Image (cartoon, rainbow, N blue to C red; front, side):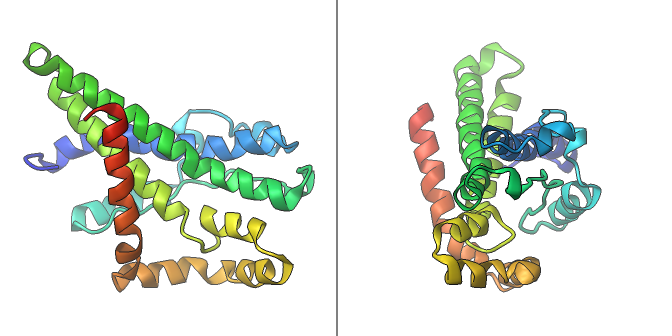
Length: 216
């Protein structure tokens, strides 16, 4: 977003970022509860209070450093615990639980698109017009990035868990066995620029879809 100082950027980005990660994690826990696993609810994680979901390293330190350095913004929240044995149909239900997070980010992108639209409609008649537009724009971008990134079919990302739930047994086991290396694979793909080339086109395509749906 042009013409914003770093403090101004933090001011408009903080709320959309916190809601993006909070709603994402709550969506996992809420969906798990629908399929019979109350673990997240028992641990107090079905809440929109961001403090319950913040990981000091992944939510604050890493994204903050990347933002200051001007790099690709990447981070994570504390994962909502899911006890897969409690699920009625563990393999299928776990895939749906995993997909709920990215799905919530798409809905949040639409919400922030409406905020940007309202800000645009207010125009010069309100002091809140420009902040709402910037906040809405960042909310759209961060939620779509989180959605597409998390749908990448690599455990422990949500897309990897969805793929494990959809693939036949032997293939699912092979993919699931990559989970212990998934974070390092993801970092390597980011460092080499390969990840950006893979997820860039769908990010831009979904952004255009959101702009169209909300009339921006």
